[in-house]
Length: 218
Length: 218
DNA sequence: ATAAAAATTTAGATTAATCTAAATTTAAAT
DNA sequence: ATTTAAATTTAGATTAATCTAAATTTTTAT
Image (cartoon, rainbow over all chains, first blue to last red; front, side, top):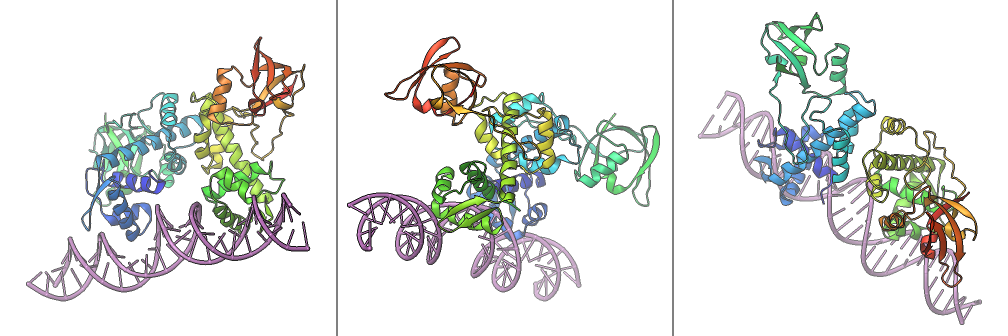
Protein backbone atom coordinates (compact mmCIF):
# COMPACT_ATOMS: atom_id res chain seq x y z
CA UNK A 1 0.00 0.00 0.00
CA UNK A 2 1.13 3.52 -0.71
CA UNK A 3 0.75 6.28 1.85
CA UNK A 4 -0.45 9.82 1.22
CA UNK A 5 2.99 11.12 2.15
CA UNK A 6 4.70 8.82 -0.33
CA UNK A 7 2.27 10.03 -2.99
CA UNK A 8 3.14 13.64 -2.23
CA UNK A 9 6.85 12.97 -2.58
CA UNK A 10 6.31 11.13 -5.85
CA UNK A 11 4.23 13.99 -7.22
CA UNK A 12 6.85 16.52 -6.15
CA UNK A 13 9.63 14.54 -7.83
CA UNK A 14 7.55 14.27 -10.98
CA UNK A 15 6.89 18.00 -11.17
CA UNK A 16 10.45 18.98 -10.32
CA UNK A 17 11.81 16.64 -12.96
CA UNK A 18 9.32 17.81 -15.61
CA UNK A 19 7.60 14.54 -16.56
CA UNK A 20 10.08 12.66 -14.39
CA UNK A 21 12.79 12.76 -17.06
CA UNK A 22 15.39 14.67 -15.09
CA UNK A 23 17.20 13.81 -11.90
CA UNK A 24 15.94 15.74 -8.89
CA UNK A 25 17.93 16.96 -5.90
CA UNK A 26 17.17 16.38 -2.24
CA UNK A 27 17.03 20.08 -1.45
CA UNK A 28 14.68 20.83 -4.32
CA UNK A 29 12.24 18.31 -2.92
CA UNK A 30 12.67 19.63 0.60
CA UNK A 31 11.90 23.17 -0.59
CA UNK A 32 8.90 22.14 -2.61
CA UNK A 33 7.37 20.13 0.25
CA UNK A 34 8.46 22.43 3.06
CA UNK A 35 10.36 19.73 4.90
CA UNK A 36 13.97 19.24 5.85
CA UNK A 37 16.54 17.62 3.61
CA UNK A 38 17.10 14.84 6.13
CA UNK A 39 13.43 13.88 5.97
CA UNK A 40 13.66 13.77 2.20
CA UNK A 41 16.67 11.47 2.32
CA UNK A 42 14.75 9.03 4.50
CA UNK A 43 11.80 9.05 2.15
CA UNK A 44 13.95 8.64 -0.96
CA UNK A 45 15.38 5.47 0.53
CA UNK A 46 11.89 4.19 1.08
CA UNK A 47 10.69 5.12 -2.40
CA UNK A 48 13.70 3.36 -3.89
CA UNK A 49 13.06 0.37 -1.63
CA UNK A 50 9.49 0.20 -2.95
CA UNK A 51 10.63 0.66 -6.53
CA UNK A 52 8.91 3.95 -7.11
CA UNK A 53 12.23 5.69 -7.75
CA UNK A 54 15.89 5.12 -8.54
CA UNK A 55 18.02 6.85 -6.01
CA UNK A 56 21.78 7.19 -5.71
CA UNK A 57 23.26 8.74 -2.60
CA UNK A 58 24.38 12.32 -3.17
CA UNK A 59 23.41 12.01 -6.85
CA UNK A 60 19.68 12.66 -6.84
CA UNK A 61 16.56 10.72 -7.66
CA UNK A 62 14.44 9.88 -10.69
CA UNK A 63 11.07 8.14 -10.87
CA UNK A 64 10.77 4.61 -12.19
CA UNK A 65 8.05 3.68 -14.66
CA UNK A 66 5.97 2.54 -11.70
CA UNK A 67 6.58 5.85 -9.91
CA UNK A 68 5.68 7.88 -12.98
CA UNK A 69 2.44 5.99 -13.33
CA UNK A 70 1.52 6.84 -9.75
CA UNK A 71 2.41 10.49 -10.32
CA UNK A 72 0.31 10.81 -13.46
CA UNK A 73 -2.62 9.14 -11.72
CA UNK A 74 -2.50 11.64 -8.89
CA UNK A 75 -2.20 14.57 -11.30
CA UNK A 76 -5.18 13.24 -13.25
CA UNK A 77 -7.27 13.13 -10.12
CA UNK A 78 -6.08 16.54 -8.94
CA UNK A 79 -7.00 18.21 -12.19
CA UNK A 80 -10.33 16.45 -12.60
CA UNK A 81 -11.34 17.57 -9.11
CA UNK A 82 -10.30 21.11 -9.95
CA UNK A 83 -12.61 21.08 -12.95
CA UNK A 84 -15.40 19.70 -10.79
CA UNK A 85 -14.93 22.37 -8.16
CA UNK A 86 -14.97 25.20 -10.68
CA UNK A 87 -17.66 23.95 -13.02
CA UNK A 88 -20.07 22.39 -10.57
CA UNK A 89 -19.39 23.89 -7.16
CA UNK A 90 -18.77 27.56 -7.95
CA UNK A 91 -15.14 27.63 -6.86
CA UNK A 92 -12.89 30.22 -8.48
CA UNK A 93 -9.60 29.16 -10.01
CA UNK A 94 -7.66 30.52 -7.07
CA UNK A 95 -9.65 28.51 -4.54
CA UNK A 96 -9.34 25.00 -5.94
CA UNK A 97 -5.76 24.05 -5.21
CA UNK A 98 -5.83 23.27 -1.48
CA UNK A 99 -8.98 21.17 -1.65
CA UNK A 100 -7.75 19.30 -4.73
CA UNK A 101 -4.55 18.50 -2.81
CA UNK A 102 -6.68 16.43 -0.47
CA UNK A 103 -9.14 15.00 -2.99
CA UNK A 104 -6.34 13.74 -5.24
CA UNK A 105 -5.47 11.07 -2.68
CA UNK A 106 -8.85 9.36 -2.63
CA UNK A 107 -8.30 5.85 -3.94
CA UNK A 108 -11.13 4.61 -6.13
CA UNK A 109 -10.78 3.90 -9.80
CA UNK A 110 -14.54 3.97 -10.25
CA UNK A 111 -14.73 7.37 -8.58
CA UNK A 112 -12.07 8.83 -10.86
CA UNK A 113 -13.48 7.36 -14.05
CA UNK A 114 -17.07 8.28 -13.27
CA UNK A 115 -16.01 11.80 -12.32
CA UNK A 116 -14.16 12.03 -15.62
CA UNK A 117 -17.30 10.95 -17.49
CA UNK A 118 -19.56 13.23 -15.42
CA UNK A 119 -17.37 16.17 -16.42
CA UNK A 120 -17.46 14.96 -20.03
CA UNK A 121 -13.80 14.05 -20.23
CA UNK A 122 -12.25 17.48 -19.84
CA UNK A 123 -8.81 17.88 -21.40
CA UNK A 124 -7.59 20.84 -19.34
CA UNK A 125 -7.98 22.05 -15.78
CA UNK A 126 -8.97 25.60 -14.78
CA UNK A 127 -5.34 26.74 -15.00
CA UNK A 128 -4.90 25.39 -18.51
CA UNK A 129 -2.93 22.30 -17.51
CA UNK A 130 -3.69 19.13 -19.48
CA UNK A 131 -5.55 16.28 -17.80
CA UNK A 132 -4.10 12.79 -18.38
CA UNK A 133 -6.63 10.26 -19.65
CA UNK A 134 -7.33 6.89 -18.01
CA UNK A 135 -4.18 5.46 -19.58
CA UNK A 136 -2.04 8.33 -18.41
CA UNK A 137 -1.67 9.90 -21.83
CA UNK A 138 -1.80 13.62 -22.38
CA UNK A 139 -0.03 16.11 -24.56
CA UNK A 140 1.31 19.44 -23.50
CA UNK A 141 0.20 22.08 -25.99
CA UNK A 142 2.87 24.20 -27.62
CA UNK A 143 3.19 27.12 -25.26
CA UNK A 144 5.64 29.87 -24.39
CA UNK A 145 6.00 32.26 -21.50
CA UNK A 146 4.86 35.83 -22.01
CA UNK A 147 8.38 36.83 -20.97
CA UNK A 148 9.68 35.08 -24.10
CA UNK A 149 7.02 36.41 -26.47
CA UNK A 150 7.90 38.47 -29.51
CA UNK A 151 7.10 42.17 -29.69
CA UNK A 152 4.44 42.76 -32.32
CA UNK A 153 2.94 39.26 -32.24
CA UNK A 154 -0.54 38.19 -31.15
CA UNK A 155 -1.11 35.42 -28.63
CA UNK A 156 -3.77 33.72 -26.59
CA UNK A 157 -3.40 32.98 -22.88
CA UNK A 158 -3.50 29.20 -22.36
CA UNK A 159 -2.11 28.63 -18.90
CA UNK A 160 -0.33 29.86 -15.79
CA UNK A 161 2.83 28.64 -14.13
CA UNK A 162 2.27 30.00 -10.64
CA UNK A 163 -1.11 28.83 -9.37
CA UNK A 164 -0.98 30.68 -6.07
CA UNK A 165 -4.10 32.45 -4.96
CA UNK A 166 -2.39 35.83 -4.96
CA UNK A 167 -1.21 35.54 -8.54
CA UNK A 168 -4.55 34.26 -9.81
CA UNK A 169 -6.38 37.08 -8.07
CA UNK A 170 -4.00 39.54 -9.71
CA UNK A 171 -4.92 38.09 -13.10
CA UNK A 172 -8.64 38.32 -12.30
CA UNK A 173 -8.25 41.93 -11.26
CA UNK A 174 -6.47 42.68 -14.54
CA UNK A 175 -8.97 40.72 -16.60
CA UNK A 176 -6.49 38.17 -17.79
CA UNK A 177 -8.09 34.74 -18.11
CA UNK A 178 -7.57 31.55 -20.10
CA UNK A 179 -8.57 32.34 -23.68
CA UNK A 180 -7.78 36.02 -23.37
CA UNK A 181 -6.06 37.34 -26.49
CA UNK A 182 -3.27 39.85 -26.36
CA UNK A 183 -0.66 41.58 -28.48
CA UNK A 184 2.85 42.33 -27.25
CA UNK A 185 3.51 46.04 -27.79
CA UNK A 186 6.81 46.72 -26.12
CA UNK A 187 9.42 45.13 -23.93
CA UNK A 188 11.21 47.53 -21.58
CA UNK A 189 14.95 46.77 -21.57
CA UNK A 190 15.43 48.35 -18.14
CA UNK A 191 13.24 46.04 -16.05
CA UNK A 192 11.95 43.51 -18.59
CA UNK A 193 8.38 44.69 -18.01
CA UNK A 194 6.07 44.18 -20.97
CA UNK A 195 3.41 46.43 -22.44
CA UNK A 196 0.52 44.53 -24.00
CA UNK A 197 -2.78 45.31 -25.66
CA UNK A 198 -5.46 43.44 -23.75
CA UNK A 199 -9.24 43.62 -24.25
CA UNK A 200 -8.71 46.75 -26.29
CA UNK A 201 -6.61 48.70 -23.81
CA UNK A 202 -2.91 48.92 -23.04
CA UNK A 203 -1.50 47.43 -19.85
CA UNK A 204 1.96 46.87 -18.50
CA UNK A 205 2.93 43.75 -16.59
CA UNK A 206 6.11 43.15 -14.63
CA UNK A 207 8.74 40.59 -15.61
CA UNK A 208 7.63 38.48 -12.67
CA UNK A 209 4.10 38.34 -14.01
CA UNK A 210 5.29 37.73 -17.57
CA UNK A 211 7.27 34.73 -16.40
CA UNK A 212 4.13 33.06 -15.12
CA UNK A 213 1.73 33.37 -18.04
CA UNK A 214 1.73 30.77 -20.80
CA UNK A 215 0.72 31.76 -24.32
CA UNK A 216 0.12 30.12 -27.64
CA UNK A 217 0.76 31.86 -30.93
CA UNK A 218 -2.27 33.07 -32.84
CA UNK B 1 -5.87 20.33 14.52
CA UNK B 2 -7.84 17.13 14.47
CA UNK B 3 -6.49 14.00 12.80
CA UNK B 4 -8.41 11.59 10.60
CA UNK B 5 -7.98 8.89 13.23
CA UNK B 6 -9.41 11.09 15.93
CA UNK B 7 -12.36 11.84 13.67
CA UNK B 8 -12.97 8.14 13.16
CA UNK B 9 -13.00 7.49 16.89
CA UNK B 10 -15.37 10.39 17.47
CA UNK B 11 -17.71 9.13 14.79
CA UNK B 12 -17.64 5.61 16.23
CA UNK B 13 -18.43 6.88 19.71
CA UNK B 14 -21.28 8.95 18.33
CA UNK B 15 -22.83 6.03 16.49
CA UNK B 16 -22.37 3.59 19.35
CA UNK B 17 -23.93 6.03 21.78
CA UNK B 18 -26.83 6.85 19.43
CA UNK B 19 -26.53 10.64 19.09
CA UNK B 20 -23.81 10.59 21.73
CA UNK B 21 -26.32 10.44 24.57
CA UNK B 22 -25.16 7.17 26.07
CA UNK B 23 -21.84 6.15 27.59
CA UNK B 24 -19.78 3.90 25.34
CA UNK B 25 -17.42 1.10 26.37
CA UNK B 26 -13.82 0.64 25.32
CA UNK B 27 -14.46 -2.79 23.85
CA UNK B 28 -17.43 -1.61 21.81
CA UNK B 29 -15.23 1.00 20.17
CA UNK B 30 -12.43 -1.51 19.61
CA UNK B 31 -14.86 -3.89 17.89
CA UNK B 32 -16.38 -1.23 15.72
CA UNK B 33 -13.01 0.09 14.57
CA UNK B 34 -11.22 -3.25 14.39
CA UNK B 35 -8.51 -2.24 16.80
CA UNK B 36 -7.41 -3.44 20.19
CA UNK B 37 -8.85 -2.18 23.47
CA UNK B 38 -5.47 -0.84 24.54
CA UNK B 39 -5.30 1.37 21.47
CA UNK B 40 -8.75 2.68 22.28
CA UNK B 41 -7.77 3.54 25.83
CA UNK B 42 -4.86 5.60 24.54
CA UNK B 43 -7.09 7.46 22.13
CA UNK B 44 -9.81 8.10 24.71
CA UNK B 45 -7.25 9.81 26.89
CA UNK B 46 -6.29 12.00 23.98
CA UNK B 47 -9.89 12.83 23.05
CA UNK B 48 -10.59 13.75 26.67
CA UNK B 49 -7.41 15.81 26.76
CA UNK B 50 -8.60 17.72 23.68
CA UNK B 51 -12.10 18.15 25.08
CA UNK B 52 -13.86 16.08 22.48
CA UNK B 53 -15.05 13.58 25.07
CA UNK B 54 -15.54 13.02 28.79
CA UNK B 55 -13.80 9.85 29.82
CA UNK B 56 -13.60 8.12 33.18
CA UNK B 57 -11.26 5.17 33.59
CA UNK B 58 -13.11 1.86 33.52
CA UNK B 59 -16.42 3.73 33.24
CA UNK B 60 -16.69 4.51 29.56
CA UNK B 61 -16.77 7.62 27.41
CA UNK B 62 -19.30 10.14 26.16
CA UNK B 63 -18.86 12.95 23.64
CA UNK B 64 -18.80 16.57 24.73
CA UNK B 65 -20.80 19.21 22.88
CA UNK B 66 -17.64 19.94 20.89
CA UNK B 67 -17.20 16.24 20.08
CA UNK B 68 -20.81 15.85 19.00
CA UNK B 69 -20.47 18.81 16.67
CA UNK B 70 -17.48 17.19 15.02
CA UNK B 71 -19.34 13.89 14.70
CA UNK B 72 -22.41 15.44 13.11
CA UNK B 73 -20.22 17.37 10.70
CA UNK B 74 -18.52 14.19 9.53
CA UNK B 75 -21.82 12.36 9.19
CA UNK B 76 -23.19 15.26 7.16
CA UNK B 77 -20.24 15.05 4.78
CA UNK B 78 -20.39 11.27 4.58
CA UNK B 79 -24.05 11.25 3.61
CA UNK B 80 -23.80 14.15 1.17
CA UNK B 81 -21.00 12.37 -0.65
CA UNK B 82 -23.07 9.18 -0.76
CA UNK B 83 -25.88 11.08 -2.45
CA UNK B 84 -23.40 12.57 -4.91
CA UNK B 85 -21.92 9.19 -5.75
CA UNK B 86 -25.30 7.60 -6.38
CA UNK B 87 -27.05 10.47 -8.11
CA UNK B 88 -24.22 11.88 -10.18
CA UNK B 89 -21.58 9.17 -10.55
CA UNK B 90 -23.66 6.03 -11.10
CA UNK B 91 -22.64 4.28 -7.90
CA UNK B 92 -25.08 1.76 -6.43
CA UNK B 93 -26.07 1.98 -2.77
CA UNK B 94 -23.81 -0.91 -1.86
CA UNK B 95 -20.74 0.73 -3.42
CA UNK B 96 -20.75 4.11 -1.75
CA UNK B 97 -19.69 3.39 1.80
CA UNK B 98 -15.92 2.83 1.46
CA UNK B 99 -15.36 5.86 -0.75
CA UNK B 100 -17.52 8.06 1.48
CA UNK B 101 -15.39 6.94 4.45
CA UNK B 102 -12.48 8.73 2.82
CA UNK B 103 -14.33 11.71 1.37
CA UNK B 104 -15.93 12.54 4.72
CA UNK B 105 -12.56 13.67 6.08
CA UNK B 106 -11.94 16.38 3.50
CA UNK B 107 -11.87 19.67 5.38
CA UNK B 108 -13.48 22.50 3.46
CA UNK B 109 -16.61 24.24 4.57
CA UNK B 110 -17.10 25.71 1.13
CA UNK B 111 -16.81 22.28 -0.45
CA UNK B 112 -19.43 20.80 1.87
CA UNK B 113 -21.87 23.65 1.51
CA UNK B 114 -21.53 23.92 -2.25
CA UNK B 115 -21.92 20.16 -2.59
CA UNK B 116 -25.05 20.39 -0.46
CA UNK B 117 -26.43 23.11 -2.74
CA UNK B 118 -25.38 21.28 -5.91
CA UNK B 119 -27.35 18.25 -4.73
CA UNK B 120 -30.27 20.56 -3.90
CA UNK B 121 -30.07 20.07 -0.15
CA UNK B 122 -30.95 16.41 0.09
CA UNK B 123 -32.51 15.32 3.39
CA UNK B 124 -31.66 11.62 3.24
CA UNK B 125 -28.80 9.51 1.96
CA UNK B 126 -29.18 6.45 -0.31
CA UNK B 127 -29.75 4.21 2.72
CA UNK B 128 -32.53 6.39 4.10
CA UNK B 129 -30.44 8.02 6.82
CA UNK B 130 -31.12 11.70 7.46
CA UNK B 131 -28.53 14.30 6.44
CA UNK B 132 -27.76 16.99 9.05
CA UNK B 133 -28.06 20.55 7.73
CA UNK B 134 -25.31 23.17 7.96
CA UNK B 135 -26.19 23.79 11.61
CA UNK B 136 -26.11 20.13 12.48
CA UNK B 137 -29.87 19.77 12.79
CA UNK B 138 -31.77 16.79 11.50
CA UNK B 139 -34.68 14.72 12.64
CA UNK B 140 -34.90 10.99 12.64
CA UNK B 141 -38.19 9.93 11.07
CA UNK B 142 -40.47 7.68 13.09
CA UNK B 143 -39.35 4.22 12.05
CA UNK B 144 -39.52 0.64 13.29
CA UNK B 145 -37.72 -2.55 12.40
CA UNK B 146 -39.52 -5.06 10.21
CA UNK B 147 -38.88 -7.56 13.00
CA UNK B 148 -41.13 -5.46 15.27
CA UNK B 149 -43.85 -4.85 12.68
CA UNK B 150 -47.45 -5.91 13.26
CA UNK B 151 -49.01 -8.77 11.31
CA UNK B 152 -51.69 -7.40 9.02
CA UNK B 153 -50.35 -3.85 8.79
CA UNK B 154 -48.98 -2.01 5.76
CA UNK B 155 -45.61 -0.26 5.78
CA UNK B 156 -43.13 1.50 3.56
CA UNK B 157 -39.41 0.74 3.61
CA UNK B 158 -37.53 3.88 4.72
CA UNK B 159 -34.08 2.68 5.70
CA UNK B 160 -31.62 -0.09 6.46
CA UNK B 161 -29.60 -0.75 9.58
CA UNK B 162 -26.86 -2.90 8.08
CA UNK B 163 -25.28 -1.06 5.16
CA UNK B 164 -22.88 -3.83 4.17
CA UNK B 165 -22.54 -4.58 0.51
CA UNK B 166 -23.77 -8.17 0.95
CA UNK B 167 -26.97 -7.11 2.67
CA UNK B 168 -27.73 -4.36 0.19
CA UNK B 169 -27.15 -6.73 -2.71
CA UNK B 170 -29.57 -9.18 -1.10
CA UNK B 171 -32.17 -6.42 -0.97
CA UNK B 172 -31.57 -5.53 -4.60
CA UNK B 173 -31.96 -9.17 -5.63
CA UNK B 174 -35.25 -9.35 -3.74
CA UNK B 175 -36.46 -6.04 -5.10
CA UNK B 176 -36.60 -4.33 -1.75
CA UNK B 177 -35.67 -0.67 -2.04
CA UNK B 178 -36.32 2.57 -0.20
CA UNK B 179 -39.94 3.48 -0.87
CA UNK B 180 -41.03 -0.12 -1.42
CA UNK B 181 -44.40 -0.82 0.19
CA UNK B 182 -45.18 -4.07 1.93
CA UNK B 183 -47.75 -5.81 4.09
CA UNK B 184 -46.83 -8.16 6.93
CA UNK B 185 -48.70 -11.44 6.38
CA UNK B 186 -47.33 -13.82 8.97
CA UNK B 187 -44.67 -14.13 11.62
CA UNK B 188 -43.37 -17.67 12.10
CA UNK B 189 -43.02 -18.39 15.85
CA UNK B 190 -40.42 -21.10 15.28
CA UNK B 191 -37.64 -19.01 13.69
CA UNK B 192 -39.09 -15.49 13.71
CA UNK B 193 -39.04 -15.40 9.93
CA UNK B 194 -41.62 -13.08 8.39
CA UNK B 195 -43.86 -13.56 5.38
CA UNK B 196 -44.64 -10.32 3.56
CA UNK B 197 -46.53 -9.22 0.45
CA UNK B 198 -44.08 -7.27 -1.70
CA UNK B 199 -44.64 -5.87 -5.20
CA UNK B 200 -47.71 -8.08 -5.48
CA UNK B 201 -46.09 -11.37 -4.54
CA UNK B 202 -45.43 -13.20 -1.27
CA UNK B 203 -41.88 -13.48 0.08
CA UNK B 204 -40.39 -14.74 3.31
CA UNK B 205 -37.45 -13.05 4.97
CA UNK B 206 -35.36 -14.36 7.85
CA UNK B 207 -35.29 -12.77 11.28
CA UNK B 208 -31.79 -11.54 10.54
CA UNK B 209 -33.03 -9.66 7.49
CA UNK B 210 -36.11 -8.36 9.31
CA UNK B 211 -33.89 -6.88 12.00
CA UNK B 212 -32.11 -4.71 9.44
CA UNK B 213 -34.98 -3.11 7.54
CA UNK B 214 -36.57 0.08 8.82
CA UNK B 215 -40.23 0.79 8.05
CA UNK B 216 -42.69 3.55 8.56
CA UNK B 217 -46.40 2.92 9.05
CA UNK B 218 -48.66 3.64 6.11
C1' DA C 1 45.04 21.78 -5.95
C1' DT C 2 43.37 22.84 -1.85
C1' DA C 3 40.36 25.35 1.17
C1' DA C 4 35.76 26.99 1.93
C1' DA C 5 30.97 26.57 1.01
C1' DA C 6 26.99 24.08 -0.14
C1' DA C 7 24.50 19.91 -0.40
C1' DT C 8 23.49 15.62 1.46
C1' DT C 9 23.43 11.90 4.65
C1' DT C 10 23.66 9.72 9.26
C1' DA C 11 22.75 9.41 14.14
C1' DG C 12 19.74 9.95 17.62
C1' DA C 13 15.12 11.95 19.32
C1' DT C 14 10.22 12.86 19.01
C1' DT C 15 5.17 12.30 18.00
C1' DA C 16 1.05 9.66 16.55
C1' DA C 17 -0.98 5.42 16.28
C1' DT C 18 -0.72 0.89 16.99
C1' DC C 19 0.30 -3.72 19.18
C1' DT C 20 1.24 -7.71 22.84
C1' DA C 21 1.48 -9.17 27.33
C1' DA C 22 1.00 -8.28 32.03
C1' DA C 23 -1.45 -5.93 35.72
C1' DT C 24 -5.55 -3.98 37.51
C1' DT C 25 -10.41 -3.06 38.14
C1' DT C 26 -15.21 -4.21 37.68
C1' DA C 27 -18.91 -7.50 37.11
C1' DA C 28 -20.78 -12.12 37.53
C1' DA C 29 -21.36 -16.46 39.76
C1' DT C 30 -21.33 -19.68 43.16
C1' DA D 1 -18.48 -12.90 50.45
C1' DT D 2 -15.12 -14.88 47.84
C1' DT D 3 -13.69 -16.55 43.66
C1' DT D 4 -13.74 -16.48 38.75
C1' DA D 5 -14.38 -14.26 34.54
C1' DA D 6 -14.60 -10.26 31.72
C1' DA D 7 -13.32 -5.69 30.74
C1' DT D 8 -10.00 -2.27 30.92
C1' DT D 9 -5.67 -0.13 31.63
C1' DT D 10 -0.56 0.12 31.90
C1' DA D 11 4.08 -0.94 30.43
C1' DG D 12 7.06 -1.51 26.95
C1' DA D 13 7.81 -2.14 21.72
C1' DT D 14 7.13 -1.00 16.87
C1' DT D 15 6.35 1.71 12.51
C1' DA D 16 5.92 6.00 9.78
C1' DA D 17 7.19 10.51 9.38
C1' DT D 18 9.50 14.09 11.02
C1' DC D 19 13.23 16.96 13.27
C1' DT D 20 18.10 18.86 14.98
C1' DA D 21 22.81 18.53 15.02
C1' DA D 22 26.86 16.34 13.59
C1' DA D 23 29.41 13.99 9.95
C1' DT D 24 30.30 13.26 5.19
C1' DT D 25 30.49 14.14 0.26
C1' DT D 26 30.37 17.16 -3.62
C1' DT D 27 30.93 21.56 -5.67
C1' DT D 28 32.88 26.09 -6.01
C1' DA D 29 36.33 29.40 -5.64
C1' DT D 30 40.67 31.00 -5.10
